[in-house]
Amino acid sequence: MEKALLKKMQDKDLIKGFMSGKDFCFAELIDRYKSKVFTTIYLIVKDRGVAEDLFQDVMIKVVRMIRSGKYNEEGKFLPWVVRIARNLAIDHFRKMQRNPVQHESEDYDIFNSVLQTEESSEDRIISEENARYMRKLIQQLPDKQREVLIMRTFGELSFKEIAAITDVSINTALGRMRYALLNLKKLAQQPAKFTGYEEAFQR
Amino acid sequence: MKKHFNDEDLIRFLYDEMSQEEADHLLSILCTDEKLWQRYEELQDTITEVKMSELSPSSEVCDQIMAYVKDSANTEDEVIQAPHSEPLLSKARIRSQSSLSLLVAAGIGLFMLATVFGSLGKVSRTTAQDPGTGQFTQEQPVMNFQWEDDEIEENIESINQRLQKITGEKVM
Image 1 (cartoon, rainbow over the protein chains, first blue to last red):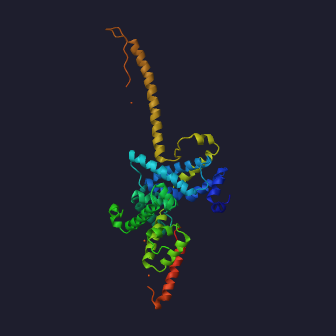
Image 2 (cartoon, rainbow over the protein chains, first blue to last red):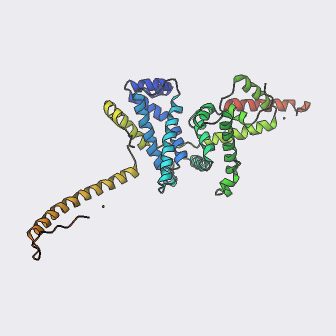
Image 3 (cartoon, each protein chain N blue to C red):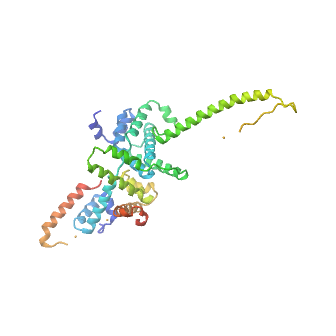
């Protein structure tokens, strides 16, 4: 099927296509949402290698659930996948807290990234550096603020859905989002105090 | 109708989680309230930066997932029965699995050697008889604004710019 046509298809149609045996429909879904799902996982586990393993686990679970008819068509695809990703990432995080091991830092991908952008423009490299810096700041947010920020921004879950998942009121979820954004801005204005994040937090 | 808007309202507006009536009211206030406008811009900028921090998985990982999708297309039984999804590509796991395989192979080898030599030893021991007691012996193994007439035109232009920015750069 023509790629331009696939790009115009809605998620639910791609899922139906996949269920009828058209694997390229799932490839389009992966291409459409891989970055949002992967970023969600990465910002929770804070380790690229582990995030890639979990990303595979999530996608395989998604494949199995769709094939077994467990996907609810009424729901939105991305929020559904992000819920699965969040659960698996949290499970993993809990296991790691019980059995801590030395993690690979994002330095692991800095080298790869530099290689990949070697022939690209200076702007692109600066943009990637800014993105990496922002990920570092996000990872330093308190867990509850980070969780709401990730689910709303990358998972596209509504504040009402986030409130239900995290078992808090919508106002609390909105409040956490507000503090997350305020703290990020504050952190971004204080690069010199990059290691003293906690003192900058309002909550 | 609500007259004062706070950061949470701006966030709901930025994420398209506000009713059309409330959004229109906020929009009219945003055009004249300097402080509220500044808060809006700050929140919007931060959200934009967050959204730009997306990270993609490696292409190998996506290829491996699609390989799994194709390979497992006709194996429903295996899909249903498999209790746990192992990652298809994991350097760490591959390393640990390789190490585990080596350990298992070495263990089997040692066990076989021990069995062979143990048997030989047993044979030799059984052939050796304590000369004192005459019995056979065995060893046991040990693991986020004011109007003035002459500024009206300028202000109208400013408002138009803001409206354009809001409608053009709304986050979602």
